[in-house]
Image (cartoon, rainbow, N blue to C red; front, side, top):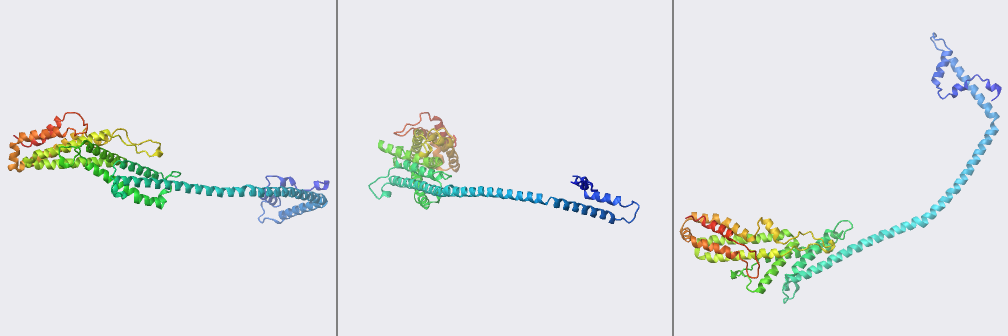
Length: 434
C-alpha cells in the first residue's frame, strides 16, 4: 500500500473487526451529525458520509485491481492449469478403477451370481431328495405295516384262507405304527418329517393305512382282553382246559397288553378297568338273583369264583410283563416309558394293592344294599335266605377262598384271603339279622 493509500481517512480496522455491527455504526453516524435536541433528524448527512466511504473503497479496489491485474490473472491461470492437471490425474485413476471394477464384476461378481444360482438349485434338489427319501421311508413302513396287519387278521386280510391270524404280529405292527407317527411328528425346520404333511401320498397313507390299522389293532386288543379267561371252574365260559390252550391264552393276552401299551398306555388302563367293571357288574347281578333263588346259589358262586380266578391270572400276567420300549430307532434307543411292569399303573389307578382284593371289596360294597333291599321286600325268598344263613355264609366264604386261588398254569400272589372272605360274608349276613 502506497503512502497516499495509507493516509486514507477510512478506519479499515473498524470494518475488519470480527465484532463489527452495521446497526451501532449507523447509530454513531446519526448521533455525530445531529444534535440531540433537534426534532427533525437529518439523515442526508450520515447517508452522504456512508456513500462517500463506499465510493472511496470502490475507488481503492479499482486502483488495486488495475495495478495488480497481471499478477491476479497469472495466479488464476496457474490455479486453473493446476486444476486441469489434477483432473487429468484423477480421471486416469477413475478410468483405472472403472476398468478394475468391470474386470472384477466379470471375473468375480458374475461368477458368484452364477454360483449362487447353482447353490440355490442344489439346495432345492437336496430338499427334494430329502423329502423323497422321507416319503419313500414312510411308504416302506406303510407296506411293512400292511404286511403285519395281514398277519394279524390272517386269511381274511391276505386272501389265503389257510393262513391263521398271528396275534404276535400285533406288537410289531404297533411298533411300526409308532415309528411312522414319530417320523410324521418330526415336522420342524430341518427335521426328517418336514413338509411331509403337504404330500398328498402321505395324507392318503394316513387315511387309508395308519388310521384303519390303529383302529383295528385297538379293537382287537380290547376284544382279547374282554375275552380273557383262564379259570377252569366254569367250563361253559370257554376257559382253556389244556396247558397248550392256557399258554395260547396268555400269549394272546400279552400281545393285547403290549399293543395297547404301545398305542396309548391310557387305552390299556381303560380296557383293564372295563374288564374289572364287567366282572363286578355280572357277579353282583348274578349273586343278587341267586340270593333270591337259593338252589342256584352254588352254581352262581362257582361262576363268581371263576371270574375272580381270571382276575388273579390277569394280575399275575400283568406283573410279569415289563413296559415295552416305545422309542423308535431315531431316538437312539432312549425310551420315555417308566420302569416297572404293567400292573403298577393299574393298581395306582384303582388305588389298591391287589386286584382280587379290589374285586371282593367292591363286590361286598355293592352287595350290602341289595341284600338289605331283598330282606326289606320280605316274602318266601327273604325267609328262606334267613333260615339258610349258615349255609349261605359257608358258601360265600368258600367262594372267596376258591376264587382267590390261581388257576392252572398261573403263579398267583401268595397270601391269606380271610379278611376279604369276612368282608364278603359280612356284606350278606350283616343284613339278615338274627
